[in-house]
Length: 242
Image (cartoon, rainbow, N blue to C red; front, side):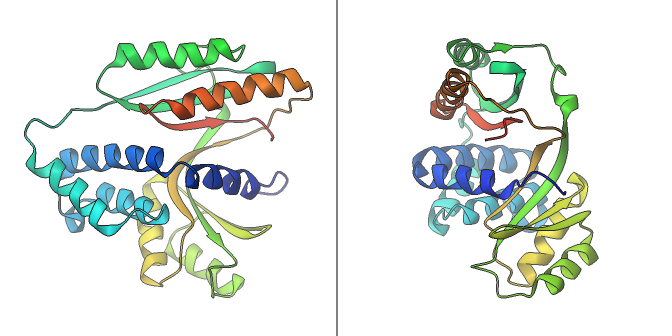
């Protein structure tokens, strides 16, 4: 994990999310619904639900809001059924972009995503056109400010739990895991009462693309802003070196 620092991008993303909690809570609410539908409402027997609850808490979602979301998903036979969708494409100067969503109307979501790419001078490609440029990893972010654990001790806790990599980056620590080991590592850190600013399975770029032209920067931000405004969009991954 040497070279490009991901912490600044993560922090920027989180600050943006904090400024739009309504959007984040909508995203997490849908994830809760899908997790309950797939594995039931009891977190003790549903590892995906445990992970979504951890994500909710990392984003400061109130416990009663989480509980209401779980109960609603478990008790409402007429609840909306969300489908997972993924789109891949290119932004300005060949920036690779992956969009993941949960939707009750695939045609609407596809049209909105295509519109976002087009308005930013990009284009949606075929499945697999950019995903090979990313590695799927569990990623846990711990800020130095919130963590009272020594860096070496934190590293040993993470590695002993099954993490693949640990790095100190700027104002925090980045822990990477295999996706299959993510839940176990996150739960060990939780048991050790280590606060996590972010904990999710994500797509990490293998290489990064710079945008030196100011117009390209504006176009890329246009794509990201339009995608961010779409409630069907859960996550956006890209290799733009901001």
